[in-house]
Image (tube, rainbow, N blue to C red; front, side, top):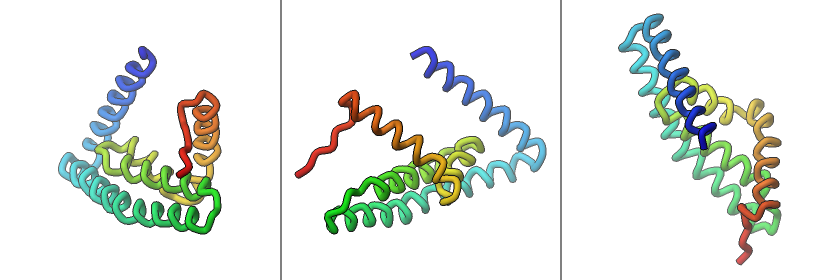
Amino acid sequence: MRKVFLGFIVYALAELALLIVIGQSIGVLNTLLLIVATSIIGIYIVKNKGMNSVQKVKNTIARGEAPGPALVDTVLNFSGGVLLALPGFITDLVGLLLLLPFSRKMFQPIFYYWMRKKMKKGQFIIVQK
């Protein structure tokens, strides 16, 4: 728990320092407008691309196929959009990396590893109806 708390503090300080540096470089108003613009883009992506991804998962299941890759893309797209919607430049960078197809491929193995680890521990269960 200490590591998580320390991680949040380090993240908040890094984000604040980056906001100050960028604010001094391009101006406070431009920095605020950039933050608002990325938040609006993130919300738009979550709404539209997220719904398209969910539809792909439904179509894959309807065809009787395993939804693994489609589900992973859905989670990564949604996570990227949410990170873009959050204020801050570090979250924007990570969110953008999750949304771009060529960089998303580097996150897919990490997500698969995390999901397998949770399934082995019984913390992630797939229920079939």
